[in-house]
Length: 183
Image (cartoon, rainbow, N blue to C red; front, side, top):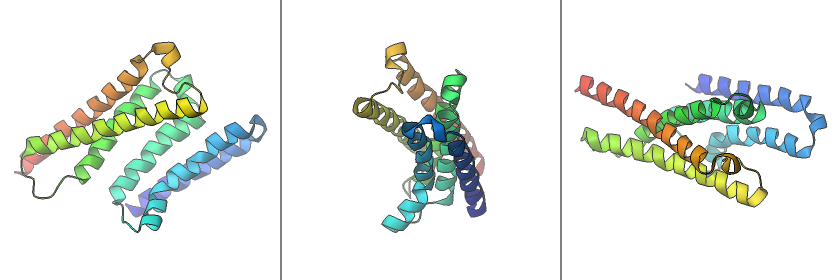
């Protein structure tokens, strides 16, 4: 898993570097926006070093895939603007990924499958809420309209959270089936 994570990290960073080099004439804001992927992709490794914790390789893999899709493809390559459904695909996938992460954080000793599923879905919903709150605060602080409020009101934000919930629910169905087969 470590080799897969390093491969995803290298692919993300190389793709980003190539993109940044092609945009040097577009201005500092664009360069900083595209360069921020270096920090976000490296964040799990920074957390491991700074806080002396060992993040699960699965969590790191989930993070790197999400950053590649959401940050590199969505923001840097502007898929969010070029392909209407891309945002909903990424948010659905984020629901699956955060549900997987929630599964890794399940409290030990819990045997009730419905509690586990509720925990997984709640964890994912909290992540979706935190992300939409982050976007909202960024919009307030630096301007912009990442949530497309001017265009859709709250519809875009709500749909993002709903499709993330749907992704987490799909993951939870798979988790339920796997647990039932195992027992």
